[in-house]
Image (spheres, rainbow, N blue to C red):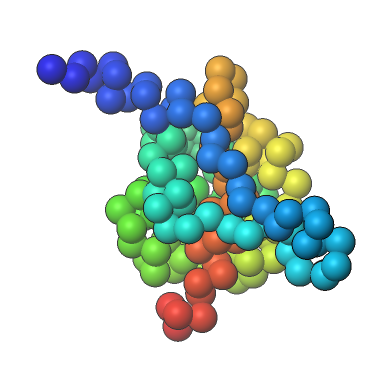
Length: 137
Ligand code: SF4
């Protein structure tokens, strides 16, 4: 039987999922974004690392106080459209902020996972779900 503790702690202990990138030999010849983005499966797996904290420090670290645990939970449930809507209730330019915000000192810097493990990868999912926003209107 799987213990409650192992269910709670295992996803957090999973190392942060590595972002697929263009190979250097390719990217020296173009101006495209280096990060290729997570596919849906990896995005969901990364979302499963979030502990859904009762007092989410990540939200305190966000200048516009996006309901981060809620949008992460919607990704976990594969409710990508609802996830984008949640973000856009707080921020109308998430695709830009997901790329340019200094998350390592804001939401990601405050994430409780960072005390022992890799912090949750906020900007990846923020930009990721936002890139799908034209499908959501
Ligand atoms: S602080 Fe980290 S683990 Fe906690 S709700 Fe925010 S993203 Fe999830």
